[in-house]
Image (cartoon, rainbow, N blue to C red):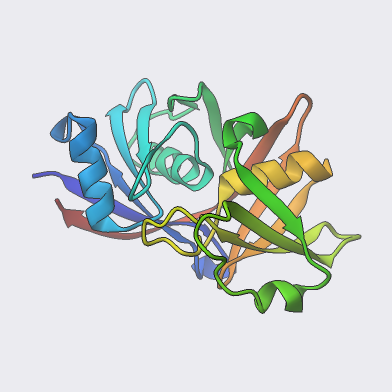
Length: 224
């Protein structure tokens, strides 16, 4: 048996909304990838993380149906949890590569590459109302990150994320990897409102690198 820490990542002001994340700090309790995939599928969160070495920041990320090389909200949330548990968490090491992580006030940040989030298609809509009115796209149409300017001058964006994987997650509440892709395309800092009220902050850097940050709140601890 192992503890599963459930967090809400990319919360709105005051700790509202946020995307649920499961983190198993004792990754050794689930050694095989098939075991990890099974737990992620059972939990049904958009992502579940297994920490293989807290000191070194080695982590393994799963959706209910697949293993991911990189993902935003799992890394922001896991870095926050490791810091709370007394680890430096200055670098996380998912399969994609080394990911710097740090805290600025109430926001936890990571730094990733847009190339690590390939396959997420962004599509601009004419207004926030158009984005709000969208229904879940049919399966087979790919990962859609729908967006519209809420205030272009201020860099405020309204988004919704539709993974289209057929694994039970029809809409992602808050998606750091897709936010990285959008920021790399627009090449400007963004304040993103996604889902029911989650907030993601981003800052572009050279060569397709993007900083992505947000608030994290501890939701509950379960035994799995």
